[in-house]
Image (cartoon, rainbow, N blue to C red; front, side, top):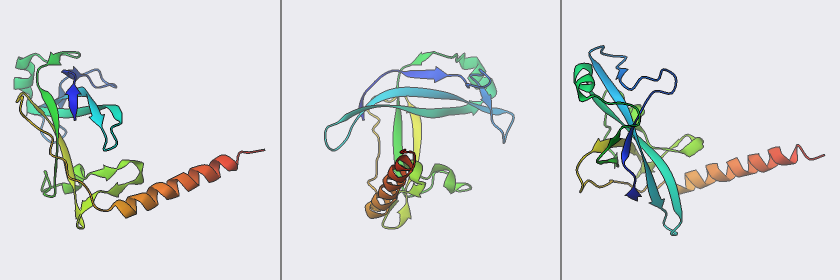
Length: 157
C-alpha cells in the first residue's frame, strides 16, 4: 500500500459518539480512525480502499486528548498479518477472511490473522502474508459466479 491520505477520526454512525465505551470494561474506551489508501495489485491496477483502526485507552485519556469527528491526524494505518493470533482469548476475532466467501485465508493449513493499527511512525510498513489456499478460493468464487448467472437467467422472460 502507498499514497495515503491523512488519518481521520470518525464518529459512530448510529450514536454520533467519537469516544466509545468498551463493552467489557467501563473505564476503557476507543476511537475509530480511517484512512483512504491507494492499493496496487500484482497486475498494476489501482484501487482506492478505506482502512480503519481502533485506538484504545482509558476513557479519561481519550477525553483529555480532545478527539473530535473529522479531526485529521498525522501518521498512518498499517495492516499487519500473522499466523499467531493477536488475541489469545478470542483468536477468531482477527481471522483474515476472503470477502463474502467466508473462507479463512491460510498458509500451509494455518489460519492468517489480520489486524490494523494506527501509528505515527513514518517508517512503519504493512506486513502482509500471501495465502496458499488459492484453489479453495477459486472454487468458491467460481461457484458464486455460477450462482449469480443462474439467478440472473431465472429472471429472463
